[in-house]
Length: 170
Image (tube, rainbow, N blue to C red; front, top):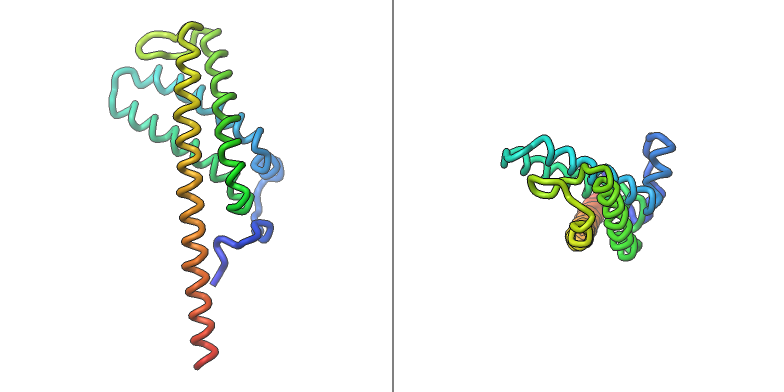
């Protein structure tokens, strides 16, 4: 049976583009790319969705899928033990870059705030919200992901051990 979650992630043999692979190893680059993409996507989604609750909900859910996907792409390059500092660092960098992207969108008058445009006076409150939601969401997601990886590793390890034990007895 193949090992889905090896102890050493260097044993993965994947065929992917070298440039994206290098970016996925860097916590700073992945977090900044994630932040810029999410903030610009949020501005576009809120502008296009208007008052349609279904579109707002779908765009909100898609944003979390992108966020958690990027976190997973980065953390998947490292062992679970290294996630302890990488996940919070990713969250801090992502929230900082998203706050700066929000400031840039405010400067060009494209940052939505409800049905109006955000102003520079709205930015400190926006930063607090960004840090609260991103830090909590990324850290909780990384914890759940680590638990799933560990449970899967233990489950697959027990199955392969018990199967090989049966084969030896037979």
